[in-house]
Every structure is written in C-alpha cells, then in structure tokens.
Image (cartoon, rainbow, N blue to C red):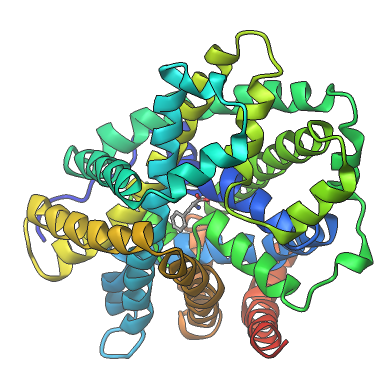
Length: 444
Ligand code: PHE
C-alpha cells in the first residue's frame, strides 16, 4: 500500500468516532436486557468493575496496536510481530466481527421497523406492546427485509470513505441522542411508582445471584466497549500522532457506560411504573428477553404528550447510533480483506455485505441461531480476543514502543505510577481475571 493512510481530522472527531462505535444497541438494547436477566444491581457492579480493571486498559492496548502499526487488525499483528502466530488474534477478531454483525444487523432491522411504525403513527395506536413486538420477531421475512436494508446502508457508508462517512455522522448525532436519553430518563423517573425500578437497578439483591453473572457482565463490557476484536485497533490506526490514547480511552469508556446506565434509568423505572404488579414484572424481567427495549419504550412514549414526536425521534437516533457501530464492525472486516487480499475497497465491501446478509437471514429465521451468534461473540470470542490482546501488549510488545505510544513519544506527561499500574493491569489482572471468569462461567 503506497497510498497515504487517512487519519481522522479533529480531536472531537476521534472521540466521536470511537464513541460512535462503542455506543450502540449494546448499550441501549443489550445492556438493559442483560441487566434484567442477571438480576439488576449486582450485574451493574460487576460490569463497572470489568470496565475499570480491564476494559479501559484493553481499549488503550488496542489503540497502541492500531496506531503503532497503522494497519488493519490482522495486518497490525503481522507488522508488530512478523513471522509469529500472533496474526491469528487479528484473524479471530475479523471472524468475531462477522459473527457479531450476523445477529446485530437483525436488531438494527428491528430498530428500523420501529422507526417506521413510529413515523407512520401505528406504534402509538398499539394497545398490547408485547404482542406488537412478538408479531415482528415471529415474522422472519419482515425481519430479513429490514436487516438487508440496514446492512446495505452501512455498506454505503463504508464505500463512501472513512472521514466523510463516520466522522460527520457521529459528530452530529451523538450529542442529540445523549440529550434525548436524558429527557427520557427524567420522564421515566417522574412516573408514579418508578422507584421500584431504580431499586432493582441500584440496590444489589443477593437472591438474584446467578453463576453466570460474571461471564455475562464481562461479555457485556467487551461488547459495549467494542473491544476484543480489533475494532479499536482499526480505529486507532486512523488516529493522528497527537491523539492522547489514555484520555481517549477514558472518555470513550465513560461516555459508553453513561449511556448504558441512562438506558437502564429509562427502561427499569418505566417498566416498573407502567405495570401494576411489581412481582410479576420482576419475574418477567429476571426471565429476560430481547424485547425489553421494544416493549417498554413505546409504552413510555405513550405516557408523554407528543408521543409521536418522541417515539419517532428516539427510533431515528437509535438507528443512527446502531449505524455508527455497524460501520465500525464492517470497517474491521472490509479493511482486512482490502489490505490483506488486495481487493478494491468496493469489492471487499460487497463481499462482506453478502456474508453478513447470509448470517442475518439465519438469525432472522432462527432465534436459536441468533442466540448462538450473540453468545459465541460476547461470551467466548471477545473475551478470548481480549485475553490475547492483553498478553500481546503486556508481555510481547517492546515496552519502549508501548510507552512511546502512550506518551506520544514523551510529549504527554504521565506519572510513572500511572504507567506501572497500567502495565500491571495488563500483564496480570486482565489476563487472569478474564481467564478466571471465563472458566468459572463455563463450569458454573
Ligand atoms: N459496541 C457496540 C454496541 O454497543 C457493538 C460493537 C461491538 C461494535 C464490537 C463494534 C465492535 O452496540
């Protein structure tokens, strides 16, 4: 490749693009349903622990690998560790990206469907919200149609280029989405009877303890931060030489967690408030289900004046948030094919699009396939990828390269203690904790 590699244009664009990848359906759809499934507050505690102890260090590590190599996620290992088997970590990441898109695009399709229902006013005439959601997931063709549309939309952005597509869209929509979430959270909190939802969310209840709690929370942390599959390696490869990697990782992780918690504050208080029987709702929530967001939110909108406006705005922004995530997923796989197999960008994108649509059809027609893709990616492939990435940066990479990347060749002043803690987390805490949780989750 002789062409000069593009980089993101501005500092705000960098954070917006990385946060755009992280913030998506993982925060607004998957986080609440996982939290419900794992019994609330305990899950959130473990989740935050995962973000702090290995989420942030791992995100920094991916940035280091990406900017240190300026290559796609597999090429990066090739460049930094030539002649070794580390390239398989990058390849595993590419495969993981595929698997994630294989079910994620279906949920993106649900979002489009709800956007359409909302814009046409139909969503606001619904009386049985559960039946409304079930009629969507019981209709594979309807899901497939929306899924294909969304996949093609993402590929359009991939083809139209890194800077224009990703940066511009993230910069505009992220702040609006954020504001809207705050408005919805406030509305939800002011509903009568919402406090039971807040307690579910923030007061740990040991009777909800499940053996898979740790693995679920760790998987969610990886999924939500977009780490463990080379997505942040790819984005790191577009950073410029002045990007402060630590600061960016902290900002992105903070924003990402904030959006997830906000989504929780919207959904749980309203779920509890809008039903008359908290015992039933607790059982339903603990039983989990992917429909939480799509069942509770329309009900919340209908409690608000101008429900048509709020509902439409929300589902449009949700679709955009999902789009900035699918763009990042698709970029990983496309760039890999483009750079490693020297196929033109357009052709690479086309190949990826067809592959994703095939997997998406599988997920639309079979909820078992959907769940398998979800489980395999979040609970197996991402943690494994994260484990190897921490070993790679902690043990294999030359310490001078790591420090030069973190400090931008010495121009970012970071305390010695900070660097020591970072390396310690990466060498010992991250790999051991990931391994322990992984084994415990599989055995438990
Ligand atoms: N983090 C994204 C979300 O929360 C999903 C994602 C996972 C994107 C892995 C890229 C890589 O929706």
